[in-house]
Image 1 (cartoon, rainbow, N blue to C red):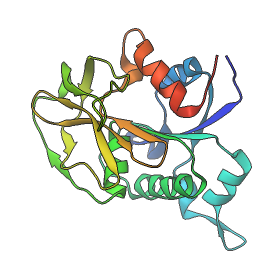
Image 2: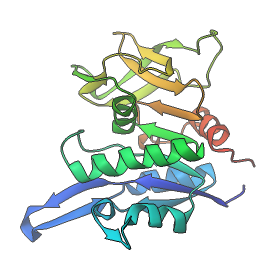
Image 3: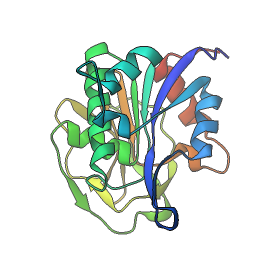
Image 4: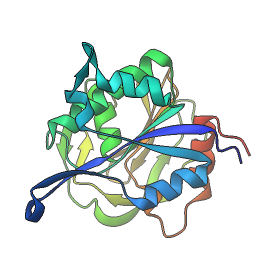
Length: 216
């Protein structure tokens, strides 16, 4: 497996009240999952978006130095909970779009991607700490998209509508959009957490390897 694919991965923000510390955090399971894909995970610092160097946004300099081959928008935090993270991820999507980089959004990452594309979120029930089957699997031509039949679920918000420029890959039985893909860019997103499966699902692994251009 080639390990030369550098994958920038966003981090959740946690405030540790007992220490008065605001920390970036990344689930070690997500690191393990990216390594299993065949990638090198490179965590993106959130606070860097607020800093400048030589009149240039330091995030741009960070991206130029790291030169990631792909981007993962990770889960955790609600949108609008921490503006630094929201701004960082919007900037990363703009950067990836300009350079035609592949992107995967996971849970919040799908919500962020859809919000970036102009749609809104709604509150839902029955999707936290559970599992469910995907009622519809396929793309606009009805072809199988390489998506698991059953997935985990840890979210209480959903994408209201399929964002412009995207199409639906999968829905749950209660018609909640569970996975989307961009019609032109090499972008996909899902509401489940592939890294939280007891054993990583090879269906997810193979689909994302293809998305990121990772070959064995």
